[in-house]
Length: 224
Image 1 (cartoon, rainbow, N blue to C red):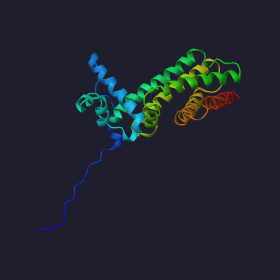
Image 2 (cartoon, one colour):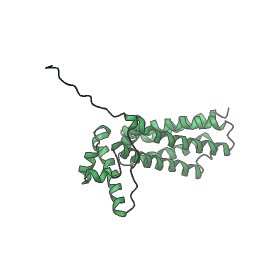
Image 3 (tube, rainbow, N blue to C red):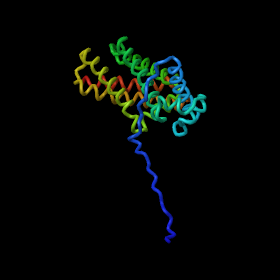
Image 4 (tube, rainbow, N blue to C red):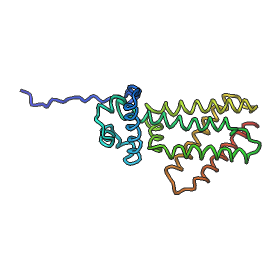
């Protein structure tokens, strides 16, 4: 009889195949309360334990819920992170769209452009700062492949709206060039926002001013 030990293979789930869609949207008031409790608890736990240590079991314990109550809506922690990411992106996107509608792009000098961009940057920073789990949600959207589409879809939509608004005002650059620039400047603004959130000892106003100067100068150079 062979003494060789049998080995068992452990199937590892492909991270790209993990389901991130919400199973169902709550219809009853009580179900809506449970849904919001899960998201609020997860956001606050992110601030406490970070992205890696967040788990559905931890959320259940902190929220006082049974696992089936959570899994009714979210199949895993990535689905929770996606819902949080969708909500944060929607809030940020609306701030940009409101800024455009309020005339944020209608400036006559470099100084006015910088000041307008500072207002937008600070508005988005404040929205993000008040969002539970803020920096960790941003990290998840950047670092986890199955969640990146949330951030990219947001960036694409905002870039197109900015480009269309600029073309409507007579900017000479092509729409395609303006979309590419809007994507680039959005990434720059995100980097500045992460710096403000991750390093609160730094001068947030100065960071916003510096990045706004870079953005305003870039669009002016496109006119040449």
